[in-house]
Amino acid sequence: MRPLTGLLWIVTLFITVGRTLQREISLHVSQPSLNATVAQNILLSVAYTCKGTPIIEWKHTASWGTTNIAKWRPGTYTNISSSYRDRVKVYSNGSLQILNVAMRDSGYYLVTVMEEFGATIYGTILLNVSEILYEDLHFVAVFFAFLTAVSAVLVCLMWLCNKSVLLLQKERHRLKASATEETELQMMGC
Image 1: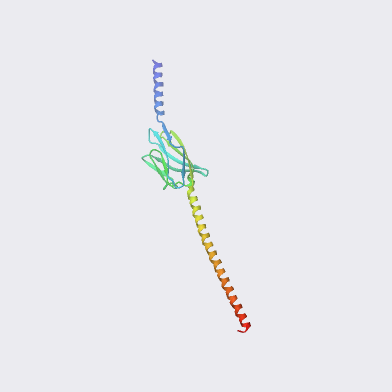
Image 2: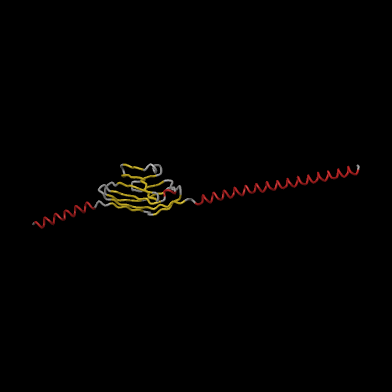
């Protein structure tokens, strides 16, 4: 009878441990890498499953260091870093939206989902932010048009100056010619 009691005790222990381990959490990162342009809104999309209510935390890691973005427990509290306060929206499924991204937002985003009993799972999303190229081309086109207009005005001014100089030279030549004629007439005694 004793071996049966010991076996029953071991089976009960395995069932208890199995139920304790059953409190799993899982995390699904839909896009592990994102590309965005400056001033765009992006969604760092994740989904988790958890038996209880987890704590979700987002951090940004770049070459200059790690920054805490947000930490919240869905349905109870949300703590958003002051540097992200006006630019971040958090969602109950664990996703994070960053509004108006800048070049400094490039880097790795680490999401941590922690269950109240200690189980933790991590996910990572790489965000590449690039500048909008057509704005640079727009600036070059406007600058080129401005330089063309300025050069056209300068060419016109040079043409007017040249015409003025030619007219002055003709007038001077005419005056010189008439002065020479007068002098010759005076010399002739008229």
